Length: 169
Image (tube, rainbow, N blue to C red; front, side, top):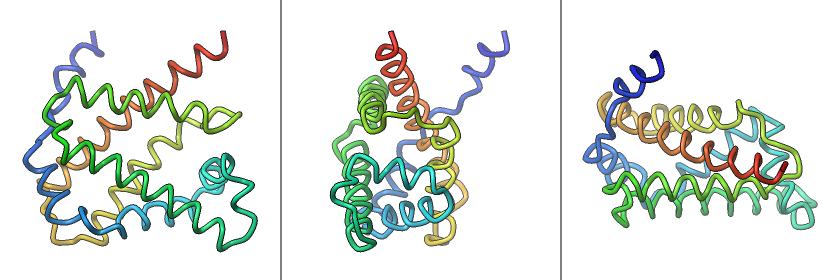
């Protein structure tokens, strides 16, 4: 019964405010995702290693690691750009599918399963960067962005776990 109530209490995405955060603060500023990757790698060596593992042959020096991580940040930025600017955000079913599919892709990035805490750490780091580096965002915008990040995270995790469970069969 609690799960059903939680579902109905889940806030709807505030598309206008999510777009506002993207268009007015983040879009065109690659520093947001670069800073997210920088902070997450500094804070969590496990996540850093997981991100570098598929590209180990290209990341033999610090400069090469930085290049690989910068490319990952660029790919994350492109994904969010697609969600917000290509109107995927307007269609909840399409939005879920895009996030789910990306989560499935993540299952092939590492031979070891990602820790569950890694997923939430990304959300928290993305919020931390928004709050600290973009103090002009309103509390309402921050709340909308957080709900959006949780939606993305939840659906990516579903795709990831489904892909992992299928590969273990």
